[in-house]
Length: 336
Ligand SMILES: Nc1ncnc2c1ncn2[C@@H]1O[C@H](COP(=O)(O)OP(=O)(O)OP(=O)(O)O)[C@@H](O)[C@H]1O
Ligand SMILES: [Mg+2]
Image (cartoon, rainbow, N blue to C red):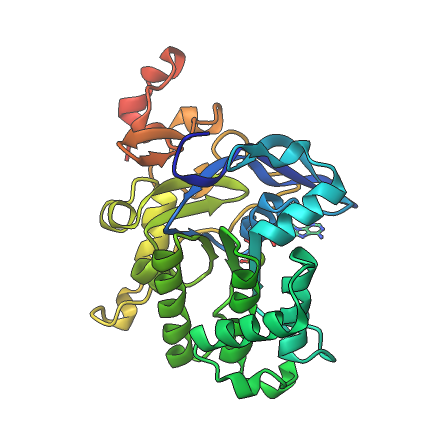
């Protein structure tokens, strides 16, 4: 795959088995994350962001399953790897940072032990001494003094713990870092430092970073490109500049209008009507149509493709696609 993509998902679908039946938490989603870029993934709670992040690493466990799609990682289709091969591949190539690093760090292991274990699992020939020196160098690069290496995770601040998570990813020379709500538990100052660090590493080491977050302001500040999910599907994707300046999908337009803005009076704050659908029985065709101010008859009948509307800017919305002939005559009259 001679391109800049570190990872590319094609038509990925994930289903959860619930008492009410199978739920499509991710439905036919395609996306790519390029070398040296931060892709921000946003959308309302429950729209499938974390499920998509886990699916990219094939971390979907029973009773959920990936039902369709390919995940290309530098030329390898991860869907063809056995569980064992996938475990090794993930450990070598993908770093993960979650909201609460305490759930990923072992509370009874010192920071240095985490790092040495990670380094030596993947490079067994490295001596203890060399692994220790590399660990000290790694945390130093991330602004943690080497004398904190002997601390246990609970002795570190939240921001430091997140940096330890990055250092573990860097210890592997990971090409992709998936950060799922990684800054949610940090205060705004530490969040700003952490995000600046991610940006710098992304540039310096040519990493690909998927930043999953509710925080649209943060995405506007740091992401190179933005992906917007709605009810398990991709609604829009494009450069941060395009998506924030000229959002195409009515859902993205609503989402951006709903972000508090210091220049607006409080009573001007926009509230999107309705709520996201229950994924057990989502609305047919475009899942956003019951909430959409531009709803047309075709929207409840046929799912629009996720197509390029302008250059690299893609959206799944009939406003930008040729409506099938049988719905065309009613299009003009019903347009908002
Ligand atoms: N283990 C599970 N079993 C059944 N359904 C699940 C499970 N985990 C997630 N889901 C469902 O899958 C959908 C997507 O959930 P997911 O956690 O990916 O959303 P999210 O966008 O990350 O939400 P949030 O912003 O709240 O983190 C939701 O409808 C959720 O209820
Ligand atoms: Mg989530």
